[in-house]
Image (cartoon, rainbow, N blue to C red; front, side, top):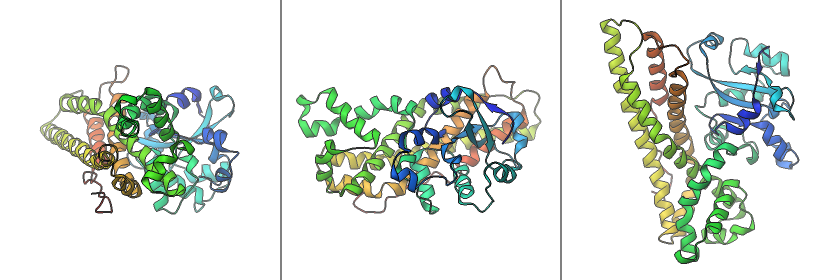
Length: 374
């Protein structure tokens, strides 16, 4: 591995978003005693299966680590001490120059090893959100245990209030508006977010007429749509602000006519693609809203049941769209701060090209497979 160290891994664990961090060390500590974790690991290599996988915004001195231009890379971090994360860790980037040699010397993995295939799939994703990750891995024939697909601690805390507000109509339908108490809503929200509905939600399973296995899958999908809806709600103000800043930023130095024309065109194209992507995400989420209203307002459980069954088919597009938007916001906020030098024409051109490429062909809304859901 590279001889550089990563510091503040404990801060990373506590503060990183779901879309940015896949904390396999935490998964091992929480589920390492279970049969599912042992029999269906994400990585066959023990050290990799206890690593921290991070979507990392590349610094300017890291750009030369890769062939071709990119602004985000997938970082594999191996903690020096699994019980004391403040000790830091060692890392490498997926597909950096010399990546095959590093993996062979560190883990004994050849280029055709299944773990290398899994890393390449992860590297191609715009984010590490568990719903996009699981669906993309499944399409490639990789199906690890469910324990690998969880929402980060930081996001769970921020999501809690949002989820409670979202599901309150269902609790009102069950017990009546006058009998709703915060505790009952909070309990149901906690069950959905934990991914472990247990016996306390048996009545809902029977209402939806789902088997135990299908119900577990349904709760996972329900959590996915609540997560995506929360992400879009959280991003809207930031997206609007960044779009405005993109329209007015001026690079350092003088520009010739061609550069001015290109930047003006790129700004408008990027703005259009951002708006279209937000609209496409909203349209897909309205499918969820309609299905949930069928259950919580109209009492039509079959509509929501059919939606949950078909939901995974929409995760890839939603995850890609929101991942691209999150990348734009997070990289813009990272690059354009007082501690960074003013941007020059060439760099600004590269950034806008990267943003536009990330949104290319992502504007068609996902279509559910069943007419009943539509």
